[in-house]
Image 1: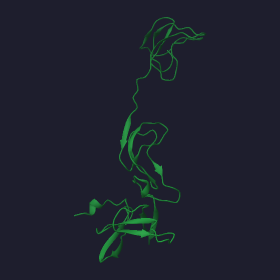
Image 2: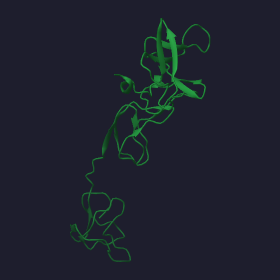
Image 3: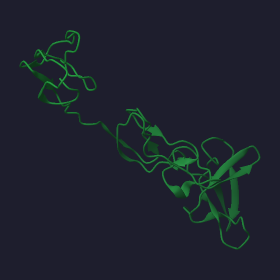
Length: 198
């Protein structure tokens, strides 16, 4: 019984095949005799001078990860996207060695965990012992603009809201600015605004 095959095959040269009933084995030939007896478990019959081949009818498991999640190698559940990466989400097939659905931010850019798009990779604005991640694209209007090269064009953007929210999920510190007679909180994409709405 050659490994991972469905049906009986002619006994190869140099071996004898007594026939019998054998257990499927994905990687090992079974039922071939060379200087020894068959010692496999019995459950599939073959005629004399044939070895059984059973092909596995295996459908790989697929897992759907939400935006901000990826599928690790050899995993059967999605994981929250790591810091300094983004995970667009999607459907992935189980793989023992390949991690799927996670992309590292470009060199020198940062992102909080749980991000799902490349534009969420950006810079870190440190404020005292707190910090906020700034995006590569504008998400809110108005937003905080950061011009690193002083060319008059914003390079990174901070989200702004009139809600009273912390700068990021990792701190309770708040960064507030006053613009057009309105007070805004600066926050990054790790903050879930819905928990602060009334």
